[in-house]
View 1: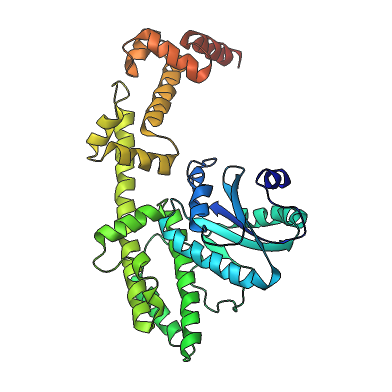
View 2: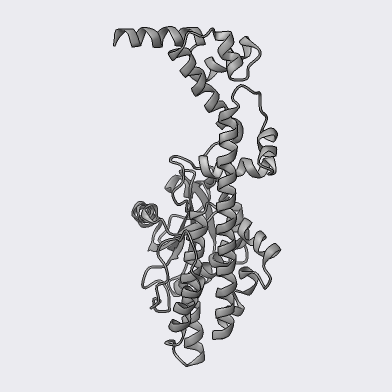
Length: 366
């Protein structure tokens, strides 16, 4: 990190630094998959914080972790923390992925580097979309209300709203303190919302686009500022939010079934030279959209999935049958033996003949 700081022109003197670590949250995702991580571009955040006078920079570390460093004076800490946190909360609705963000401050860049490994470990243990400010960095007290810690596979909207309404009745009567309490409550609900979207592998931006198209009332992004005006507006905001999440859950379940149907179609027709469009037409979906669903749910594209299944079947036929290699090529949709051999060697490192010979010899030795 010190080397990166030097490259970016960050001074190494004993300044006060505020560091924000940001990483994408993906619940129950395919192991090793990082395709959404690269969508967190430093440019998104550079633009979002362009009007903050304090010098800062963002850079990607280990592909999926984004660091931001603000050089500030000690008396600015709580002000800048609140400003950055509020801006991140607003941005969450338009980002391509749900995020977890963690704040840290220190004096001197060397001290910052020393503590970042601990901060990174803390963030990697979190499966929740959240914006975490440690005690002492904020000028306001910690929230007293905890909403939901885990995403839900179904929504009990009436129960949730009753829970929220009962909590609102316990809030301070004094207007400024009540509004602050509503802000905390909104944060808890939004943490739950974005954790749920990560669980659904749904892009917050896609969710917002869907909300603007399908919501009978204002979308949550447009109404989040009005939510803290009074109790009634807050409950209306929460109601519209839960309604949209209900629809997204139904939407997700519907298209998960479509992916399963597409997979079965592929597996039952390995002898055909199917295109991505052929598969999408079978389940009456747009090819690009179905491809994204495959990547979200399986970690591979439609074409990659078809290749995997063809290769698995070809290996089985080579190992467990005496079919000729030309017949095997036809069985997995290759009319040209040369094309099949080229694909097989590219994927396995062996020709079909050498693979069969090795496997049968290996089986005999056992």
